[in-house]
Amino acid sequence: MWRFYRILAWVIASLFAVGIIGPSGNYVYDHFYNNTTASYSVAFLLANWVWLTPVSVALAGLAIWSWWQAKRARPQTGHSDGAGRFGIHQLRPSPSDFTGRSAEIAALMAEIKRHRGFGVILVGMAGVGKTTLALELAHHLVLQYPDGQFYVDLKGSTSAPLSPSAAMAHVIHAYYAAAQLPSSEEAIEGFYRSVLDSKRCLLLFDNAADTKQLEPLLVPRSCIMLVTSRKQMALAGLLSKTIDVLPREDATRLILTIAPRIGGQADAFASTCGGLPLALRLVSSALAQRPDLDPSEYLRRLNDKQHRLELSGTEAAIRQSYDLLQPQLRKRWCQLAAFQGGFDRLAASAIWSLDQDQTQDTLSALVEYSMLLWDEASHRYRLHDLLGLYADGSLDDAGRAEAQGLHAQYYPKYWLPPRRCTSEKATI
Image (cartoon, rainbow, N blue to C red; front, side):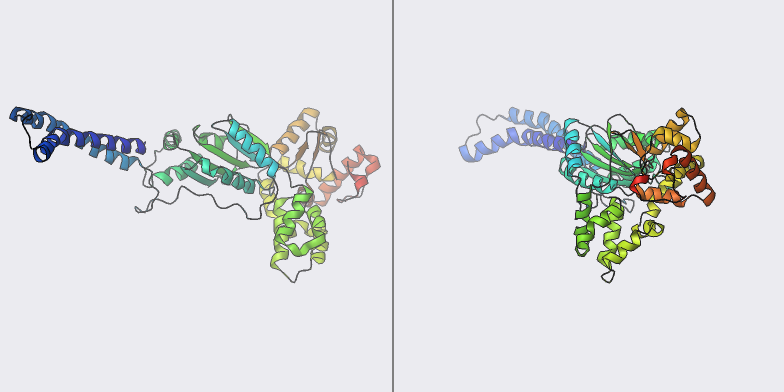
């Protein structure tokens, strides 16, 4: 809108110049250069000044008013009044060692190009690299959205998610630092969309909690929003894309990029970390930062399941997701540690002693929270290895024995002592 007022000011100023200078300017030119003023009678000049001068003054006033409106409407990104806390170019750089995901980025870019006013929700388990991928995708799009690039952490995996009003205020204050926001969320939502209207902005909402938090943040069609979440969501206009762990080749390449001295053991490290980017990065960084740490010795320690979560640095991230579950859902998720590989709904039903409908609802809830992986091709569920370790560690001895006992009744020929194992034969 401020650009409109600025153009209007220039147009009116030009009309003013023509009105005040035009006829009288012709008179001066003819007087000095053509040595004639015969065609300009006193009556003509009087008419010029009596009628055109007030019009020109009015045009000048309109030009000044339009310039003032342009100044008021122009986004304020500075901090001179002390109220502005945010800029409008907030994206942090994506990691310089970003590895893989080329197929995902190409597919998402194609979808975004195909649909105007499009958005993407990247969904996946803790540590799978959703935020890093979103940042990389955002930097691919930044030139298409020059009016602003915003990053807002919605804190959805914490006990105190950011309110939609606070997220909208973050954006509004980037343009109007001293703006006094309305008291109701509906009014703030209107202000938020008015600020973004006709702008080409990119908004990255990281770590969304649910659709209730996200729906008020939907942007006008001139903008795009990228969202990350551990929870599956469905919102009109937003494509949901589930992010998986890195393939072995990309995982190995990331490890060697961060810590080249790992050398030929990179594949073993990638396997131990289950291709989870967070674990890959933290394990590799530990070896890069501690030159006295022998890779073989560190790998031996990682293979000890009692210490793998701690050494891979993933325990805290998994705990955040675990804490979001209701107590009954937590218990049932932990019982799934009895399975050493994939399983179907019937097997879960046996472990939980539930009917098929209750079992399906429970499994769907765990998939929704990215605590359980679903394989569309085989129609089977499975726990990521690191999630399985956390689930098993969260059971007490009695709970573990109960789950293993029920597992043994369902799969008697695969019965094992009540502990997690890595035997291929025991994979169900």
